[in-house]
Length: 450
Ligand SMILES: NC(=O)c1ccc[n+]([C@@H]2O[C@H](COP(=O)([O-])OP(=O)(O)OC[C@H]3O[C@@H](n4cnc5c(N)ncnc54)[C@H](O)[C@@H]3O)[C@@H](O)[C@H]2O)c1
Image (tube, rainbow, N blue to C red; front, top):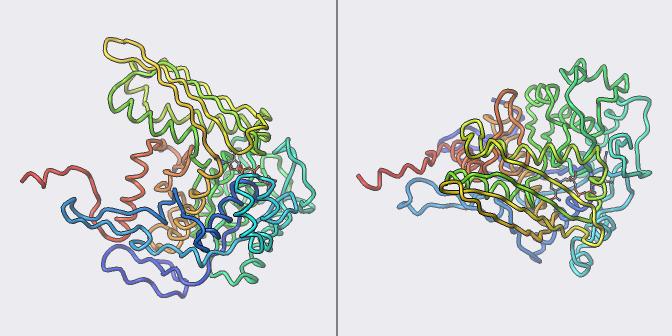
């Protein structure tokens, strides 16, 4: 059991969890549309101007015991998550804009709301970023750190973290990557362990992307790290090693919003009813900066990989070859500036039923990307901080129980990810029950008929 001097919460049952005392500092590399919508939203909720819709930690309940017990406490009363009033924020960006200016430019939230939040949002200014155009070709900004090598840049990020902790008076910290999608990279020998990674940092190895430097810096400081983009970032042996050793939980990757959210709601239904799928064509138009970045084939490839795995894992063509072996799955993202953050995602799904008769389903989701992503950021921050304070979760590395929030969930090597939203939701809630020593819910239900 870790010991950080704090008083351990004395649960009746379950494993010890330290209480959420003091402030929780949220550090965000990438202060763009998602990050500003999240921070502005938290402040709006704190001021009573809006409701935290979409957030499990703020609005969700959890059933305990039998259906006949009628016991469903709010999740935030059941597990000791940090209160919104205790959140403080900081971050990094390649642009110098404070959060008010960045939110205005992102164009997600309405003018009137932003004006009410202006004093607060204007006070959050980005640190200089670790950035290299080789990894995000469509962007260029001046608010960028300089150093002789990548190790020096990592040291500077570590100093930023310590300085923020001191100046904000935060008791604990969490880092969550909301930066742009980097080009597609694969693990190499440089990412194998701490020694190889640090050598590669000193030698400016091109296999180390900026997002990995933030992740390394956070984990070295013992701070949990979540990855909201599809980049490799935390999904590397070195990060797992550091996460476990420094008891800094990690999770990722790529927030599950829009089209993939729909896919992981629909596909489990088709499989449950043994309906075949011969094709799934998904296309998007979006016009925010994320869309512009994804217009570059390098960044798109990273996103495409993250989006494509979903169906394969849900439908399990190896178990159901007659139904899913020949599925044609295509994903397109088209940068279309007039739409801004208000994406439109079309899906054409060709399915077949009894005796092989074909049918079609069309989904046209007019969504708001950052509005869907913001509550995910909030929940991840609060749950990662909970995991950090939990004697049982803090040293296990990857928090697979948070798969619910990701398009491409991280797992230990050799374990295939669980994509089905409903299994993910059950896994998350059962993890919370387990932490508090409550019975897991299996939905067997035979006891009602004894
Ligand atoms: N909005 C969604 O629904 C959603 C869903 C899944 C994943 N994502 C991912 O979340 C990320 C953020 O999305 P967004 O819509 O806010 O994009 P955005 O372009 O509005 O914001 C990203 C910000 O990151 C900054 N940035 C880029 N590289 C950086 C670096 N090395 N260090 C610091 N800052 C850096 C950019 O300057 C920009 O301000 C993207 O990678 C996106 O793919 C978003």
